[in-house]
Length: 158
Image (tube, rainbow, N blue to C red; front, side, top):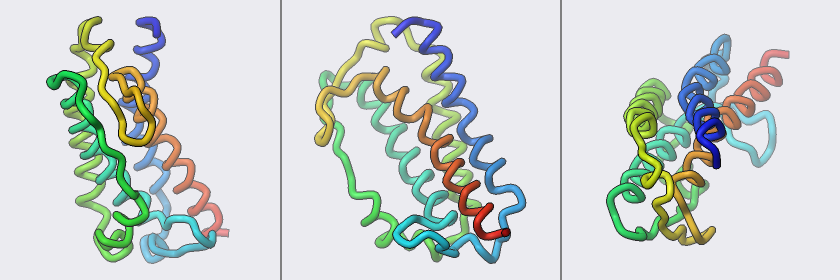
């Protein structure tokens, strides 16, 4: 990956929180737990997932940067949604956690040296896992979920 490509992904990563909060603008608060699409997450579930995922991703990045060939474990996001009461909790603290974890990781990304970008570990579900791979995944993550939230908002405000 070139420095320009990395910079583009870092910028996308930096913009993820803003995308999610923009998608939540004008979302009817009483409909955050509505499920207009069978089998798909509600807006509240998406926000809670973003918080848990971002906190986990922050730890993944730190393991990659500090441990020799760390094992990064996958998790069952649907089990989290149920066990962590995603639809029953206020989303404000989840948004704070998402923002905070992302902001601290961004501080690291902006300081990485070439050798840091090449650090590698092993993901229990997908195999080889590098700092660059981490960046590609999480740069898009907030944006992808923001699009889901906008789709839910559009459906619920017809």
